[in-house]
Length: 213
Image 1: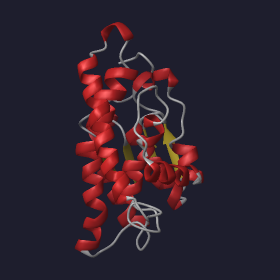
Image 2: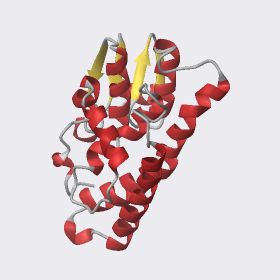
Image 3: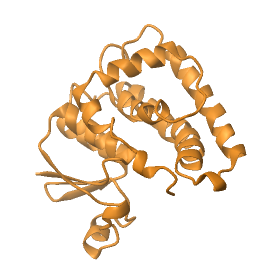
Image 4: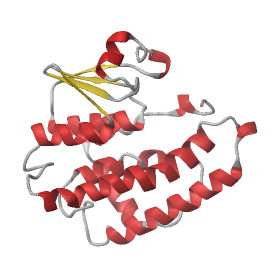
């Protein structure tokens, strides 16, 4: 059986579990990382030398790095729905996957969620936090324009672009920061919240992370 290692309140683990939920794949979840530990054991490091989460094991193969895992699962189990053998068609969602990982996620996850939510109040650097809030808004305003007239990021169907980017929204809309009006993003977010796999695997309380680096 497919095994998934990681904390359920880890954003990158949530991306993987969300796709697994959409594909309805039988799997075993193994809590790891944070208070669960297990990442520095010889057995774990043999499969993932970086000692990080998420990690999946599938028929004797270990795959690490969340977006690599998504590509693997989509190619193996989600052809015609989440994967294309056509290089240009793949680039449609892979561009947004890379954008979410290299542009949106650093601005929000690093400079807002970590610097604000996960940092004790006395240690917060508001120059970093305000920069992150401003940059996150800028990136999401771009996305809002892109989503105009679309049900999902690439049209009428959920794709890997939605999973990598949409997983961030639950945190973005549930911490106390200023946010611009983003009608298309907000409508898209409502559609995501209507998906059972999103509710189960992404809408996970994270208040236990408050003030904890």
